[in-house]
Length: 205
Image 1 (cartoon, rainbow, N blue to C red):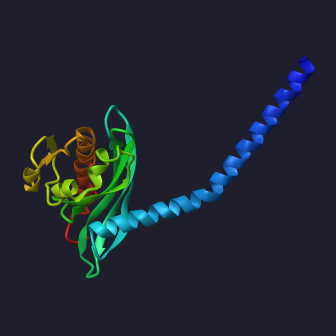
Image 2 (tube, rainbow, N blue to C red):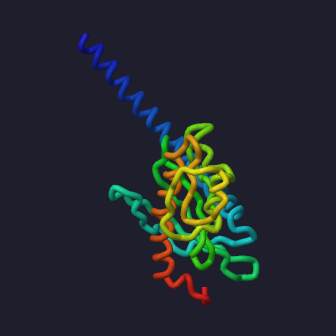
């Protein structure tokens, strides 16, 4: 009986080893493709926010605190128009949502004073409620809003047409709405400080 259990244990160990090896090989084979797809999607989303521009990383692995001492890193892209003039800046910003992590692609103007808009890079928010953060009704409120601390409040849809630092939450999805605002507040002002410190807001860039 003991010999039987030993044989079975070895079979389990060997099987686990080969399955683990198979998963590792599969992951290695697909990781490049996955990364390529993510970069392609990022470029598409940035281009939809800042049209007719070339995107170049100007700051890499910038550390941003997103609360409770947690630090994430992001790259900052400059957007230059076909005339060579700066069109703005773009970056990936992330934070916890209602269901899972939310990743946004955020664009600001060349002076880093006004928000040019955002697109959702990835999100698993509740269908029909939290996933409305991709809808124009909510996203339009951020276009032209100042790069400063944003606030979230409940209100009527017509109030969402006023562009300022107050963002009207999506009805039935206050948590997801607030999550987007918190992501903006965690990233925009700290990144503006980094851009300014790097001298990227001068006329020479």
